[in-house]
Image (cartoon, rainbow, N blue to C red; front, side, top):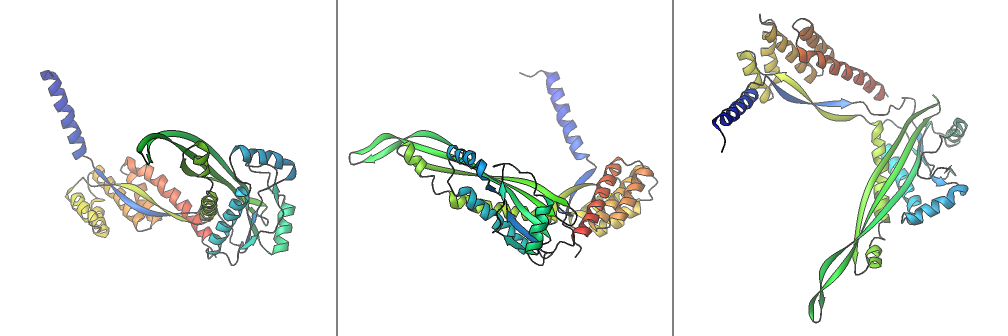
Length: 351
């Protein structure tokens, strides 16, 4: 049974937790932010080509065939999967308004000497020759494609139906994990730069059942179409690396300090941010440095919400420099990072 001292300590901890929760001076606001694409494609690239460089060189084919046998891969699985990846990327790039044309360069005899790994990049002489011959100004190249499968077996007791009724038996289950690995490069011959080198891995799980291990494994053979579908999706996903994307970020804003802060909180909760800002601006000249600092900080928040990053930085600088508001210092760094991102966005969205 707890002692009186223990009960007092427990009550104190509970009250302290409640008090801290109720006295929190900030709340979170969610903001949708447009981020620059991971890869910047120069504006002069208007007609890229897409090629497949995953055929295995003859001196490495023996090793590759052995690998496929031991990893339970079909003879054509990698070949057809790679073609699906190239098709997926080409189709997605064609949807991008910034390109006037996208050419699938499927007839080229390009090989890799490192199955399952990134080969050395194409020489710039080769890149130039391909671009001249096919009238393209950049190359999106699939340089790695590999499927790796691992199979496992298990047995479970089941009831088998017979003319004499149900009898106990054993069912064999086979599970296969297939990893689809792709790797891409983007060659820009004008600047002699590889704009991106990026690997992607996607996993697929298959299962089969049978009265013996052979029958269970036999139920896994129809996986080619699933692998091809995932390979195509990998190409589509890679195309997203050149497209700006939105994320949802959180910001703290002050909800306590004066009656105006409490009223502004209710306005913000209903989406009336302009009404909240009017009340915060009144408090930026409050005699209390703490209140004035919080108000200046909140003004920076509303400026960011309205897309006015320069003004948001000025308000947050005032909150920190004049009123020593600690949240404002961290916020200044976030805003400057967003500013730099917006400059990159302008480059990426230039026609």
